[in-house]
Image 1 (cartoon, rainbow, N blue to C red):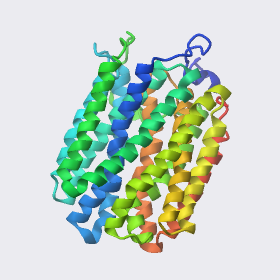
Image 2: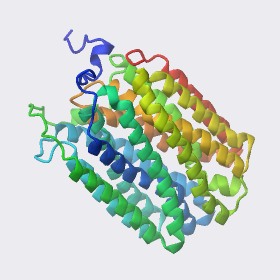
Image 3: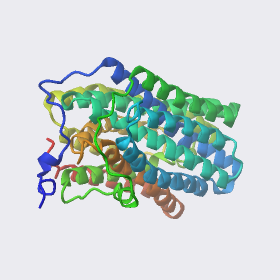
Amino acid sequence: MTERHGMTQASSAVKAPDPETRTRVGRRLVTSLGFAQFGSFLVWGAAPAVLLARHLEEIDPARKEANLALVITVGAVVSVLAQPVWGLFSDRSRSRFGRRAPYVLAGAFLGAVGLIATALSHTVMTVIVSWCVVQAAVTGGNGVLTAVLPDRVPVAVRGSVSAVLGFGSMAGILGGQVLASTLVPHGMLLAYGCVAGVLVLTAVVFVIACPDPAAPVRERSRLSLTALVHVFWVNPRRHPDFAWAVVSRMLLMLGYHTVSAYQLYILQDYAGLGRDEALAAIPTVGLVSLSAGLVAVLICGRLSDRMNRRKPFVAVSTAVIGLGLGMPFLMPSLDGALIYAALAGFGFGCYQTVDTALISEVLPSQEDAAKDLGIASLASHVPQVLAPALAGLVVVNLGYRPLFAMAFTLSLLGVLCVLPIKSVR
């Protein structure tokens, strides 16, 4: 057996810089990373919950729920397939512009084109096609962006830097909801176009502010069909900590997205606000979520670094999210939605901060960091494939209350999967 095949879990984790010798990271890098993260998540905050929901309601009001589930599901399948492939090509890139920058820019510009095409779509089929372009481009580019964390950030401060990424994610989701809700009455093209513009702007600012360092010169095997197939696979027996972290994330995201994907309809049909009131309430719910999440981000990232602990933060935050997901079950009203937003926002802020750092510390390979992060991101995107269909099936046949109970159960199962991780405390 080769040394690689015989390595222990501890030695198979990413070889990171010595925290005693490298514990600082440039403020410009941290700020621009958060800004670029904001641009990507602005798309996901604006489109599925608001733009696509309203767009599909205008195309076919009678089948809005089924069509939204179809569009989100197909787009998520594309993103699942695209992100590890983008990561593989980025890892192997030897461009004079670096390994990451060309793919970050390509994702932003192609995503912007897809958003404009979506705005100009007048049938469900053309919405599906154009949204698939958006998903492939934005998720692929964002996956490569996330690889900057293990590339350029020391382990000792990854919790703090992950907090900035987490805040960028939450601010982007809220900003997308507010921007879309504000601009939709003035026209779909304006709303989609503004989101596209921010996406491109944030990517360009990141690339200019933090140019990629020269890629290490190493001989690489040529890409082949076998390599492309293996891009979706990491052996869980050789890398059990990575596998447990991915499964934990997948369960939490599945529970979370079964509720968040139907947020407009939950407020409109379950909480009884009506169409216009529900649209107007989305920014309020989002603001509550962001405020709670910001508190968690400011506390959890730095505290996790100081305590040199990740698992307790991930477990507790997952449990808090589960509790939040259960609140609308008990309170089918706007108040219930606001309590859900506060609890889930706090939990998700802590989770986003620390789980990103945890994943970066159990990667199987530093050389293939973007590809392996792409696989980890499957745990975020596969639930987007399953959740709308699963949620639609539950809502159509059983109603909304069983949906919240299911989401609560899935998130708590995610807590249990964090416990077996051994190489990270």
